Picture 1 (tube, rainbow, N blue to C red):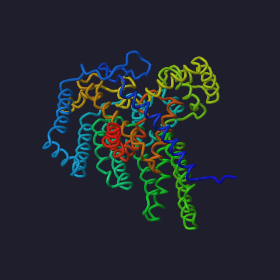
Picture 2 (picture 1 turned 120 degrees about the vertical axis):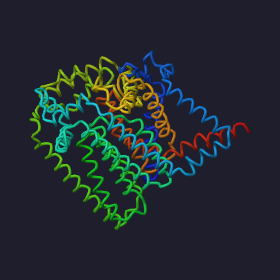
Picture 3 (picture 1 turned 120 degrees about the horizontal axis):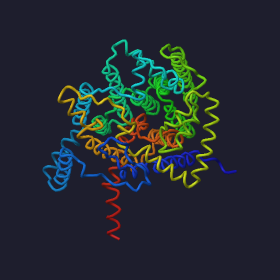
Length: 527
């Protein structure tokens, strides 16, 4: 009987992960380039793959400021290519002094975000606004039913109720939200520092662009609150997998990983996708690892701490949710997972008001039975190829929008004009009727295309850590295809995975386009 080759098995699994990742992210890359995301009237963008309305960027809608910016970029690129003096200066600033430059730019981006939040913090309606309204004690008759049906946001409600002890102004909640965003940024930088210090400037450059084009800082909701816990989990896993780290540090890291996963789960259950990715890749690693006595003992000790912290954290958070007195919950009407599966199979694959209203107030058992029937009916109605087409369109809706669904939820913002001139100027980039709204959308989309391109073409890096990031992104995309999706906002929770993966893959992607392809063309010409 032929001996099982563990190394070969792991190699094949790695190839499969990379191939599946390339397929999903490749679709996202195509959809992101083609997405018609730029509509002045604030209506949801048409990112549907099969739509006849698809076109590339509508340059005619760009304002003077964006045209000037594009002109500067074009002129700068031409000067960089043809002017040696200009090229050397740019290289000196952004390459030779990259650590200093990237640090300064990231700090400036953080300051700009703070100024933005202080000057523009409108009241947000929909889910984020419901949480704040409830936390402030302004309970409405329909709210108990709302929280009973969707109890996964109760943990966030408890947090915001605690914030009312500081103040009930909208600014208090927004500043807390910004604090979580800053914490994620710091942890992302720390993560890359642990993995590869040389790539530290890359992650800071990427995060600078992200912060400058991320208005979700003014929306206090689980999308941002989960970010530092995803980042912390990635930091902890980096410490666990990095060679040369002392065992005491790895021991603490195992506890931090458990804590981060549990806290992330109570903000968004999809945090468990990252945990599953870590387990799968870790099992692959253990297959080829030498199982010495010392290694077994260390693994057992770290595993025991992980299980203990996981159990304790989960128990405490569960008790906090169960014992909260903010709103009375009827557990018998909680929406089951199949409800979200059924909802994700109609329309654009996202939130469906009709489904939500039809299921409201029904027992979980009845909701399950109705949802199962709806799933069968919707599958039959679409047919095999119709469902494949639907999934392609849904993948586009789930991942193509570089603004992460900004304004796609509908009219969710109170448009009271900020009092300061600076606030008025900043709000013009993000308000539904803002003069520069299209400029923001255009720039955000451009940066998203670049980020997705970096992680797509950096496929040569198949290290343990990068495979965890790829598998987590695959898992989230598959989850959004199976359940309620329909907008890119749901990708925000795994932005640390995208940012860190892009930072690690940047040099491979750059080499592919600046050296590898050049070498291939040179060989072809010689032959």
